[in-house]
Image (cartoon, rainbow, N blue to C red; front, side, top):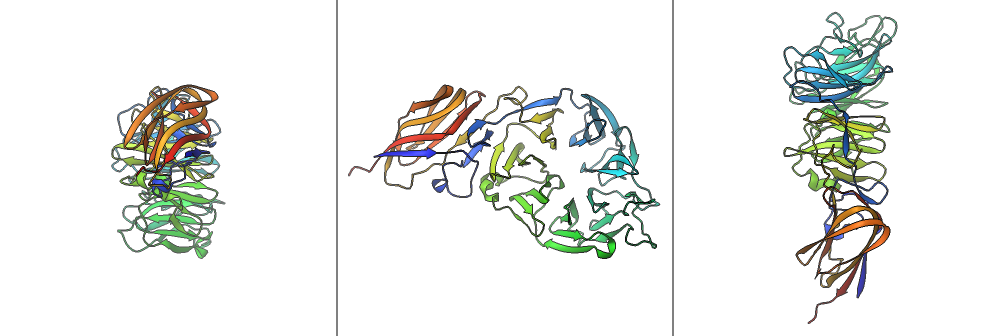
Length: 467
């Protein structure tokens, strides 16, 4: 009996169920592939955006773009200094003396007295403000705002901050700007209590410190080590603080990204979402459960570009980049390169690695000259007929590219075929081997790029066992 195993389109990785019952459009294991249009192609690589390396020897911890009307400035935060680049040239813009110990930075862009600044917090020193030319100390003892904090957010026109190691549960808020007031004043105002600054204690236990802040349009989300709170209201007299989650996983403040007033963040269980009411594991999180097994998200970085979310995880000493398509609700895994930190501007993802280069993702067909290793594996399946023997006959596909590698799996045997010179005509690939289960692996060959268009058809001969 003839049987046609058809893949009508390619979607993404799905590890939420056994391969045997997985839809053919999904892969249980794929890397460095792109399926945005339903076709299957090798993902783009990256190029160096700034040719010159970041100078110095201190370890790199953060990458930030300070967006200014005069021109964007790339900033790299190291353990001992901050380096700045405009027009491809690097300068040491600020030096930490002594060098920092924890290297956990947070930043936010603000306007103070009609001047745009980048605020920089590290939890060890008084905050800095940077105008693109010089660094200044933020706040003062007189205004009760010289406190070393680590996490920052703007909400209802006020600056909120946390991460004071002496008061780990304390959430600070600035005065409401206006008149002679600015976000550099965190003091009380007996004459106008609705515009005054101050602080709130969030929870009671020092073992559950605040570890991240992020602002949505109607509320401030406060992540603690083991719980989640939110604050809403627009002045101290109507601030309401309530617990959202009493038992939550650790969330890195660098993993939180926004889309349509929804907060997404990564934990060791995978993608999480706060939809304005509830904090929960995404309904799609199980699609990458095997990838997340043993993953470390303690220092995860996240960005959004267009309709995609990108998160880094660590598997041992290696970086994995998880790509999630918000519209199609599909995942892809990217690897083979290192990411220390990443940012986005104009829907372009920039990242920095330990070679001290800033790179631009999804450009070119190599990793800055190094070959990309990419593959897509179809589910290993018995086609729902465990007793029958499936014999490979022929594979039909259409696409473009110089070459691709096709590996067939059946009867405990693997066989590789090299398909060359795809030219948008339907290619017929004769196959052999038989067994009760079948599977395919499509990979690039020696860093080649290819595209398979409109799915694939695998023809089989299926027969019962002779008795």
